[in-house]
Structure formats: structure tokens, C-alpha cells
Length: 344
Image (cartoon, rainbow, N blue to C red; front, top):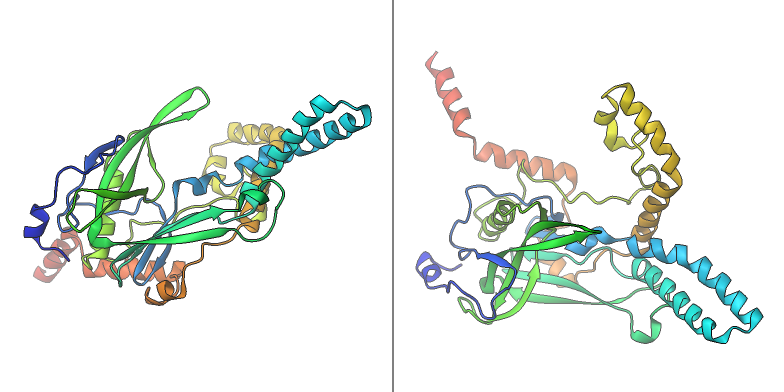
């Protein structure tokens, strides 16, 4: 752990600079925020580790939804082209068929996400990277495993940046922010050898949440804070169970729309109207569910798993850990109430 004197020597700029960065946060020994929160980006919690999901994990299933729709069309056009001798259009149809299979392959083969694992016991940051299939297997191999690698960096070489960027959804754009780790060549250096995001982004120009995520990480890695608190929540993936995927965006059946159904008769009428779109919503949900079932969990090495202090914590263990942390650090209000009770 670096001392406060060492932290004061850390550079205020990095080389090369991050064009999307709106701020370089202080060194890990310096508090960046009074509030610490993971921001819903953690997918696994270990006694000595936190695994943050990557930004693209939420995109699972989208490409295969287009590929599955294009596949029967491309096959029908291929049969027509062969039977009628349309050789020039036939080449275009073959390309369309290959692209449809490639879109399906991206969502069926590989890993569900590419997490960043913070290893407190070893003082390391592990980055899981899916390498995909060899080029000669593109577009036809729809099963099996894909290649991957794990990059490991020293925690002492980590600097945190808050970035801001624009996301385009159709013709609508919105500003989002995120936390990025810049890895320097040496502890306290300014020359960056690698950058990668940590956890999903935050919407609508929220620049405080990335700082709070960094503060949670900083405290955890320096043994200054618990791995889990009452304010934290695990990453909420969707499309992981059959029936919730089937009833996606159907408020009459979606368990997440219980509060919405209590709004009265108009809400129920709108729910009945949404049944008209059931073929489309069920298709989108089940395509993502299929992708989740076919893809694998990220694989960490045995030495990494052995250093994390045990297996990933269950929901019950996380709740108990958060309650323990709350009892260790009672609020000022609770202390005041106890003093008042003693005075009676």
C-alpha cells in the first residue's frame, strides 16, 4: 500500500491521455468520495474478490435475433438461385447466409461476459478476455468452446478515470459515463500501457456514480471497507430463466410489473393490448435466454480461485455480510438514539 506522501507524488496527467476522460481521480490512498457504491455492476462477490461485469454483457442475444430471422430467408433464396441458375445473385445470397450464421455464432459460442476481477489477497486486477474462434471457423461452428486469455495487472499500477461518451439509439443520442482503469508501466508512473472499463456505464451524464464505484473498490482493495454493504446490489441480468424470458415486456405476467398492475383498470387494459405484441416480445426474450444457456461462465485459473478466500458468496451470505458491516459502522443518528435511551 502506498503512503500519503507517495500519493502526493502521483502525476496529474497520463500519457497517452484519454480523449473521453472528464477527470483523473486521485491515487488509491486518497479518498475520492464520501459515498461508496458498486452501482449494480458486480456479478460475483468472493471473500477477497469482486468481479465486475463488462459493458457488452448486456448486449447478449441481439445479433442472433437478426441472424435467426435472416437464416430461413437466405436458405430459401439459395434454393431458388440454384434451381434457376442465378449465379450472380447466388453469390450475394451465400454471403447473406454466411453473415446470418456469423451473427448466430457470436451469441451462441463463447462466454456470457468478460469480467474484471479485483483480487484483494494478491493485490492484482485480472481481466478476462474472450478471444473468439479462429478465422477458419467463422460462420459455421455453432457449438463448442472458444479461446480466452486472462491479463493480470498490479493494483499499485492502477489509476482511475471517469469517462463520458455518447450512445446512439436509432436517431436519439444520450450521454453516458463510466469508470476506466488506466494501467501505468510502474507504480506512480504516467505512461499508460493499458486501459479498460470496470462495470457497466451510467446513463444521463451521471458523473458521481463512477466516482462512488471507484471509492468502493479503493476501500475494498485497501482493507478499509467491506466487500458488500446494504446499499449494494448484484448485476441484474435478464433472459436467464425460461418463463420470465417468455413474458418479457408483458405487464400482465411479468413479475417485475407487479407495482405497475396496481395502478388500476387503465394499466390492465394496456397490458391486454401488449398481448398483441407477444410473438415479438417472446421471441426477443427467448433468443436472449437461448444465448445465456449456450454460452459459458468465464473461467478463472485454479491459482486465482484459490487466492480469493473461497467460492462466490450466495445472496444469503451477502445479506449477512452487509448487515454485519452496518452493525460495525452505526449511523450518527443511531448513536444519538442510544444515548437518549440511556438518559431515561
